[in-house]
Length: 526
Ligand SMILES: Nc1ncnc2c1ncn2[C@@H]1O[C@H](COP(=O)(O)OP(=O)(O)OP(=O)(O)O)[C@@H](O)[C@H]1O
Image (cartoon, rainbow, N blue to C red):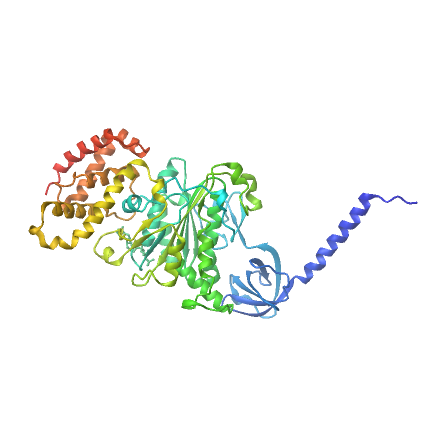
């Protein structure tokens, strides 16, 4: 009897299995039923999965969003005018993803990770990261306890942001929202120079290409492009690209976060992303809800922002994180973070509109910028009364915690009494002092664009404002006082400043600030 050789049997089986696969591949081709405005309906892709990438005959890719009984609805990520009715469509069996790598920093890419700055291919190793990914579960997280310095005095003192936090920047048009985000990115240069970079991702959604070009040149000028990637889906790009761009940005941020490093993602802005998503959903004939947005627009933003997180510092815990992409499993490390700064544009300051309330409820606080303040020259135009940060306080360094508490109460008292200021000489001395200090503190908190302050400088000047050092200084000379005061501290007391920056705060430091402050105040008297 002939012997049965196991390897022969398995070889035959393998061969048959390969044959089986290729015959199913044939079935996985569909045809375009209708196409237009960035979406297509396709017949025949029976096994397509939600979120899967598909490839059209013209080479353009799309993503399956609607699974219906006899057809699938897909968004087209590219030129849809080349696609005709009857074209074939192939499944790729890949869930939408982009290729991410360190070579992306310093570059401008589109929502699919392709470079669009004319500087050639992205260099270095690239890892496939899914565009949509489940946020890390509670077990893999750690409370926010490290500061994300924005370099902006009013934010770092009163609405501090921690690494891994989601802080919303909200306000009407032209109130300096983008400026806050860009200044925060520029401020990370300090950490890049120290060799502990915070990698930044700026996602521009639905903006003019010229605005994005201005932002790139501002970042280049400040030396901030070295650690920044710009993901741009401009106003002229199809709606699906605008709706994807923030997710692509989050995927880049997650690559940094999961390899144990800090990342910062700015989504500028989510109002435009919601509009793009509404357009796509209506074209796919999903039922519209409030303000014609589809019912899951809340989910769109919550699943994006939940991906911001601080990961547990233990490598072993981080390695078990849910939904880790295969490509980076070998390099996962704990302790990384992804901080999100989403931006929302309001209409006439109405924060109770649909999208603003949604995003306010998802984030850990908001920086509210106001047109009135902006026009009155108070820039950054932050409304101190209604801006909050729910978690960042734990991440503040000691000196900042001490001085910011007093600043907040002083400013609150000032706001209450400000209305009485017009009574002038009829006021009692205590009220006059509160108003005077309030005005000078407001002056101190004004800050020009592209001039981030180190944390020790912020502590020094805020301390001076709240402790009577500026009392003899004229209101119009507060800025001049500030410049000289900080310059003397930086040049003659570098050791003290370094200690304060390292989290030390005590009588010795206060004594130096007091001595220098009183001397310098003499040069700027009323
Ligand atoms: N702190 C500041 N000091 C001086 N000028 C500022 C400051 N912040 C912003 N600006 C200026 O105000 C203008 C509006 O700023 P920006 O574009 O950041 O606002 P925005 O709210 O993002 O606007 P948009 O509605 O166009 O998105 C810009 O010309 C900017 O240079």
